[in-house]
Length: 400
Image (cartoon, rainbow, N blue to C red; front, side):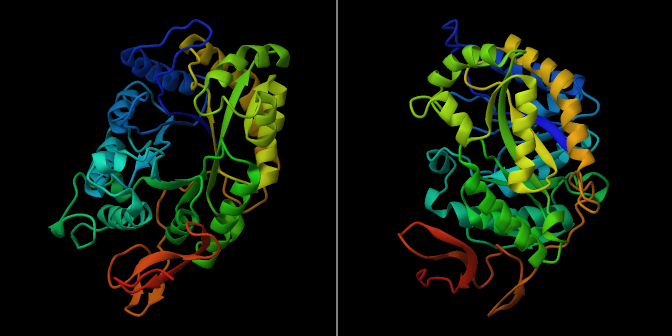
């Protein structure tokens, strides 16, 4: 079982002091947090990718490369790599380069992000978000596995005899996660390739994510990668701890109330009841985290957020000390002791699974590839709501 932390890199005012860190301070704090994560024995540090204020991590490979030079063991990952607005050729080359610099301590999480304006900023149409995610990953998958690639799709210029450089370290591509909070098409994509599925469940109720993870597990088995229990699942969490739960709640409440994502709606207590947010004593954080296995089955990666909403660096480092000393050892014992035989405890080191195949009118082809037909969700009920199945239609024909 892998445990780690993720950051979204927000630059947010501390409601307790009224001070807002500079961008320089926030970037340096991300590096300090990553180094502290390795010091306390965590397995993973992940950064998001954003191109809008109030966030600073616009170049994940730059900050992760800097962290790689200052760490020796921790896995460096992303909590979002924007597959829809980054060129998959650039993703292939940038993360292969990072993989070499970090001696293989790299994986990444594909996602579409949560900022609508980013699409036109990078020349894309948000209405094409799902097709972009499918096609761009299909190309990335090939670029890391084929030395010479010919490619023609809908969203970028064709490639003829192209080789991305450098090649993946030892010929093994970085392990890929597909992150989603709402889209069954992305769960289907992760299952098809035998990749990991990360349900960043920090804002929505567990019932929603049980459906997404259940779909992914069933389709993972359908495509022949193993049993549903062997599927590679990651989940998120958001924690704040003090020795006494009353002190934790009192200290964190201003950060919750002033958060643009959490504040202004349900109370802190209601929010903790409905979502994975856990504010309390170390024992309470342990107990809440153990419920994730009851909700989602045995899984392989747990990432916590500890540094958002304006919590200052000094407090974040204190949180990490508590996590490493009082929470992490107990979580490791509990998850290891009750894991069934045959269920993996971590993502595979070797990304060797072969993608499944889907049969269309043009014969066998890879999920998301543009040749001949395009995957679209089967629609049912009110417009805009999609059932968790994929079918194919000929280009130019309207979805039914």
